[in-house]
Image (cartoon, rainbow, N blue to C red; front, side, top):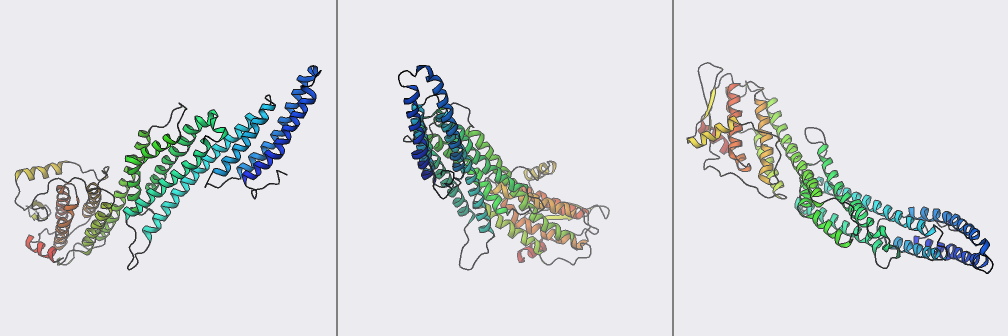
Amino acid sequence: HLAASGPATDILEFTDRGCNNFVSNICLVIASYQELFIHREGAQGIARMARDKLVAFVDGLMERYFTLVERRIQLEKGVGDNSLLVRALDRFHRRLQALAKLLPASRAAADGTEIVVRAAKERIRQYLQALESFYLDCLTDVRQSLAAPRLVGKENPSLAELLGTISASILNQIKSVLAYVHLFTAKDINFSNKPYFKGEFCSQGVREGLVVSFIKSLCQIARQFCESSGDKGGSSPPALLLLLSRLCLDYETATISYILTLTDEQFLVQDHSPVTPVTVLCAEAREAAQKLLNHYVKVQGLIISQMLRKSVETRDWISTIEPRNVRAVMKRVVEDTTSIDVQVGLLYEEGVRKAQSSDSSKRTFSVSRQQGRYAPSYTPSAPMDTNLLSNIQKLFSERIDIFSPVEFNKVSVLTGIIKISLKTFLECVRLRTFGRFGLQQIQVDCYYLQLYLWRFVSDENLVHFLLDEIVGSTAHRCLDPVPMEQSVIEVICERG
């Protein structure tokens, strides 16, 4: 009869049937048997043998019953409210305590408690999977939102709003799951006073197996977005990398401590087994945030680099005409950098810049001819004090680390992207040969970039140095290095 009770019968009804019919009948059999063969007068001689036979008989039947119970518990796959399952396990456990009082030698009560423990462990495993699934669904929603076309008159949610939504959703889901598993430790639940539920369930089950495991999983899933291949970062949208880096950073600074404090308060642990310290989890979250932000800088830098590379490689620099405009690709570079600046500013603070000089956007390049046609050099033509000159010489002597780790602020992120872009521009220029007008076009382009890019970086000298290098390398690769007048360059750039 019990075996026929499929999932159509809820777990509580199934347990009631088993307890009220089968377990109750077993108790009646035990009581009758003991009265007939063990407790009656003159039964002392056979009492021990009779008791052993009774225990073997009961344990054999209970083993078959437990097989059915475990099979039914395994059908409980829903990861919503847990109360029905907990109540069913509580009734199951209570009824077995009555059997244990009648027949202390039976192992049925101990085996029954083990079933309850296994059910609790399985529930924790299911809730961990459910949290991971929920997190992945949130990421899918974010990706769809980022990819959604902009409709006229309707604003798409900003990155900050998407971050707020995903953070709140995950936190609420964690709180719900903690409330569900907390039912296993409620005071009115009979098995909650067992050693396992007072100790190991709280520390190794809920804290480590559920909460800590989910936090580690969250960081690991986020890090996997850095493993995409290809120059443009594969299929991971750069905005998603930025959002995940901020999510992991927020977990490091506040969320992890909050979640673990909440867990420790709800599940008062009486178990002294070692647990993962908050600092270890925070370090893991920070490492994930750093990796994601570094990858964001690399991806965005490579996207801009690709534009610059194509613009240099696909042009005939020897026979090009005299420049009259800034090339469109330079305007695109400035536009994209400005967009990235706005995007990063939605999630990260400004950061610290070195003090700007008063002529940041007016610094000039010139190319002077030396002896010999192929030995040009270049010197900055703006009036320079010795302090600025020594700074630039210092920059010349230092190796610029293009893929250096990025700090968690907007200025550092933009500095990293611009470094990658300009370094690519420089490497491309060094592989080409230029005519007079090719050199002049590069002069115009570099002056235009200087007008706008210096304001995004932590140290304007970095932009000046790389642009100096680009113009200088172009002059060295030029067949007829006749520079354009600075005043003409300025007119072209202002008009552009």
